[in-house]
Length: 224
Image (cartoon, rainbow, N blue to C red; front, top):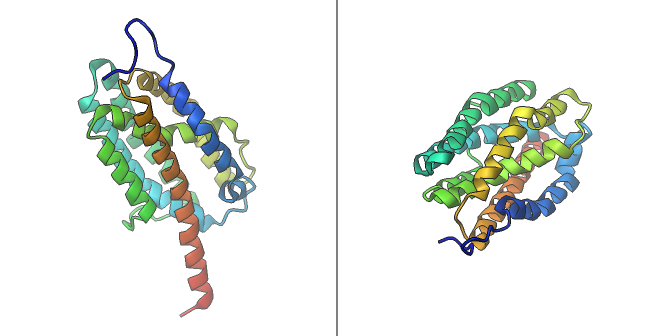
């Protein structure tokens, strides 16, 4: 049921979610992991693990877009189909490029806890169109915001990672999706809860990658 009064246009849902995102983005910019990425000192093992997990995540993310397209009103179908296609044709191709730079193995199927929880959240919320559309937003909005505010690092591999999210096609699609969000008929408190859950899971993906890399380095240091 819509929460808007007849004849009264509600404030932008996307705008409200953008305000919710600001503390998360601010915290991410201050996070030591991102700080190390930007100055080029991040352990490549962290990025390697993140890329491997992101490859698993993006394949499910594309399926969620396709699922939402099957549930969407006619005027949103193309945006969602384009989201699935962009993820498969463009994002995964760029991730494969990055994987080559960091020697990441995209054929492995070791799904980390953070990735498993995040993809389960996406799949569950996509059972309903409105909730699923909000659930896919944190990934898109977080990286769109980072692409706009981060100064690309000088280290070539990490610079390429930032450039991908600053690319015009990624920013343009994010703007299209913002219009879809504003058309959703969903309670604001429900949307906020789904969105903040997703933002927390975005952070958890990075933290898991750092923890995994740390465990690997400690095991290597101890030897057999």
